[in-house]
Each structure stands twice: as C-alpha cells, then as structure tokens.
Image 1 (cartoon, protein in one colour):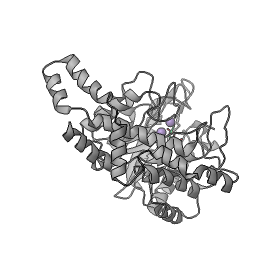
Image 2: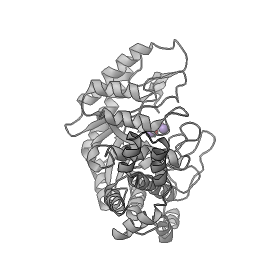
Image 3: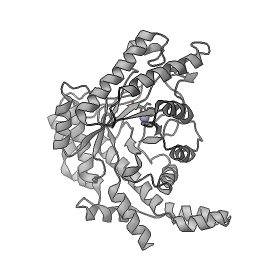
Image 4: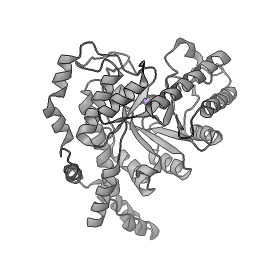
Length: 389
Ligand code: PSV
Ligand code: MN
Ligand code: MN
C-alpha cells in the first residue's frame, strides 16, 4: 500500500488539467443568463481568473481559447499576459456555429463558398496558435440535419473529409488536430460527427497528428464511456478529454458532480493504460459553464474532482486485479476496484499540495483571498462569454 501511495503521489504531482476560458464568463441556458458581478470583460481577465485556479491548485497551468469569443488584437500580448500570470495558452477552439452563414453547416455545408469560409476560419485559428504557442487545434462542428432528406448524408461526409484535410494541411509540424464528436444538438435528426467512430475514421484518414476529443457530456444515456476510452487508447487516437457532468444531455456541469463513479471508471482505464502521464499525449481539459455558481471556485472544485478520481484510480491494486481477473474471481476483481473507489483520498491530495508549497484546501484558500470581492468592485460590465446563452 505504501508503494502504491508513493507512486500515486508521484503521478499526481505531474497531472495537469486545462481550463476553458469560457468557464469564467457569464453563461446560462436559453431561458436565462444570470450575470455574476466581476466576470471578465475581455480575454486578458479570463486568463487572469484561470491563473487563480492554477495558483491555488498547482494543477491547471493552461487555458483553452475559443475563437472568436476570445478575439484580441495581439495574441502575442495575450500569451505574454498568460506567462506573467504563470500559465500558458492551451488548445485553440474554432467556432463555426454562430454565424448566419452556417445555418446549413460549416465544413459540411452544401455551398462551397461557406465551406471555404469555414476552412479559412480554421486557418486563422492556426495563426492564433502560432502567436500563442498553442499546439492543439480543437474542432467541434455543430453541423447536422434536422429533417430526413434535408441533405445527402454521404455527400456531407465527403465534404467534411475534404475540409478537414485542407485544415490539417495548414498545421505546422508540431501541431495536432483534435476532432470532437457529439451525438445530437443543435441538429436533431443527424449530426455529421455524432460519435467516436466517425471522428476516428476521419482522424485515421487525416494522418498521425489527428486525434479524437471525448467530451464526457456528448453521449447517449447509458453509454459506457470507459469502453470508448479503452478503444481510443488502443488505437492511439485519444487526443483529449472535455470533462464535465451530465444528468440529461450536454449539461456542462461540474465534472464528477453527477456521477463520480463514472469519472473514476474513466480514470481507471486511463491509469491502467498509463495514459495519465504527461507523455501520453492526452490533453485533459474541462469544458464547463458555471451558470448559477461562482466561476473560479467552480473551476477549483472541478480540478479537485478530477484529481480525486485520478488518485483513486492510481490506488487500484493492479496486481491483485489482474490475479483476480485471470483466475475468474468475478467478485474479487470487482472488490479490488471498489476498494480503491471507496478510499478517501482527500488527505493524500492535501499532503501532496502541502509538499508542493500549495494550500491543503485550494477551495478555502481561494475564498480567503477576497479575490471575488475585489474583481466585483473593479470590473464593471462583464463580457458575455458563453456558449448556451
Ligand atoms: C459543444 O457542445 C462543446 O462541447 C464544444 O466542445 C465546444 O467547443 C464547447 O462546447 C464550448 O462551446
Ligand atoms: Mn466540448
Ligand atoms: Mn458540449
């Protein structure tokens, strides 16, 4: 057990979780956006808020951008600001879903002019990556159909393959293309990248630097997400996670809030394959919105939840598990997994933080800084920085 504990501590010290810039802005549902005093007025302030999460957890050193939500004149300046705050720019997310031109889709649109516009947007995102030092281009497309017969399903896949190939050709040698899938919404009859299989097929056709993004909220109820994880890891194409929680659809709630056991099962697959290590190429990101709760504490809680699930996964006695599995000891094998899941790892993580010169309880330490009151007094007129509004 001591060995396992030490190994877990060593692995946890290396774990990083990337934060989404949009988690810090106002967001809501189509019914109401409740605005929070002190929300960032520009991408610089979003990065500053994200840096608070890193300052208190030591585990969130990168911030994803979303273009054009995070439009600035000078991306070099934004990257320098991030460095001043002790973080770096992570993945750059394209956005080809909020322009009237994309009513019938972006890369899959029947109109070649619109498809070219969507490709050009991605090339502009790659330019932002060059200026910020980002190496991951993250693509989620809202493309799809609401009615049978509305467009040709196969032709749309061909257009998608062609457009993605043009974007992929625009990447520098050290850059990756990450393709996210989502089973429905905003299209309801058919989505052009609905599942991991479709995403994987396109990635395989593109080349080695294309990988799948698994957003935990983008599956049908009952989907065995850890199986998807295992399969993508086997194929060497699990590029990134978008972590969040769902009760119903794409709820974007705090990761580990709805189903901590599912998060543990996912992390257990990750750890079992050694994919938790920074060299694995899996970018662990959050994709969440905090509609009614305070945003920075919401992100701190999220980082802690991922750390707790990872710690439990690291405490699985893999030798005992393998032995029970090989000998067909069904309940024994399940018991090994449950023992780890039922371990209270909060003390272990507090010890880790203390050894790193961090607060044992990042959530309480941040609350004690008075930062939220300060930004509420200083920032007037927050930006609408959200998806889902
Ligand atoms: C779409 O539902 C999504 O999960 C994609 O990752 C977007 O980039 C993100 O939400 C933020 O809108
Ligand atoms: Mn996502
Ligand atoms: Mn989503």
